[in-house]
Structures are given as C-alpha cells and as structure tokens.
Length: 86
Image (cartoon, rainbow, N blue to C red; front, side):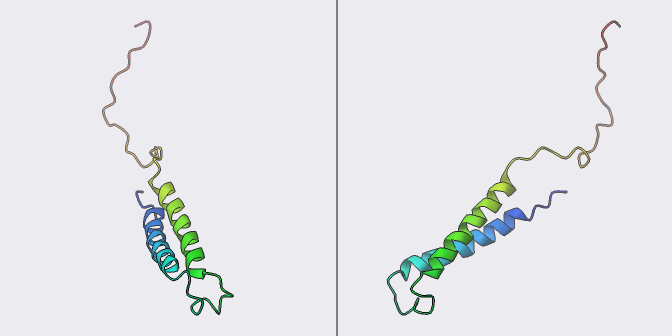
C-alpha cells in the first residue's frame, strides 16, 4: 500500500513550526508578550522543536524503501533460466 502518513504529517509540522519560529524571532525582545512564560520565548522554542520533528518525519517518509514483495505482483511470464548441464 502506498499510503505513508509521515510525509503530510511532516509537512504540517514543518509549516506550523516554521511560522511559530519566525514569529518567535520577530518578537524576541518583547518582554510584555513573554511575561507569563517567565521571559522564555516559547514560540521560538516550540517552533524549533516542531520544525525539527517535521523535518525528521518528512525525511523518513521520503527515504527510499525496498519494495514490499507481497505488494508487487509476480511476473506472469517469467523468463526461462538456463540450467547448467542442459
């Protein structure tokens, strides 16, 4: 079966993590925005983590896999093989 959920899942996490990370970079010096999170730029931290997770999922989804022998149909007319001694 050709369905691999890692590719779209990786793209979603890449997109959302990238948006959060960019927002965290642009609001890096805004103390009012990060007052409730004890001054930690939570958007930058979690955006980076989500982006990294998405990249890993996308990488493993796109990685070349060996074909499943049960999923590929057998050749109905196999080529004859030469046997030694005949």
